[in-house]
Image 1 (spheres, rainbow, N blue to C red):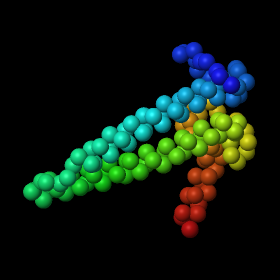
Image 2: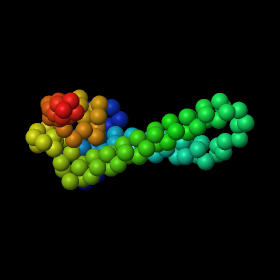
Image 3: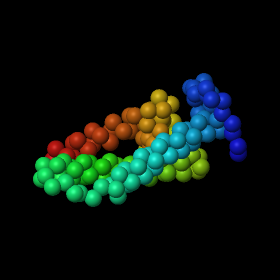
Length: 138
């Protein structure tokens, strides 16, 4: 189904949850975020490929190595995020997007706006985090 959104469209609680317009809104939001991450990742890769270390000063070399390490960690985080975005896009396609994986209840629009890759409602997420903390302290 092809849905056209007006540029000022924002989902509201007054409309049916995850109706075609709302799904398209989040699909576009996810695709835009994904494109931005891919662009940044490609720029990072370009920077890393350009820089062979030719600095004679050991402190300069160490600083460059630290920067490269940080770039690689950032790139790895972006890669994981892109994977989560792809999974969210799949959920939009299969109709499960916006619903908590644990409770099948709708995830709030505010949470989806802030974290469009969310798979758990805020309550379920908090429960998970409490469980993690409890097990970590063992």
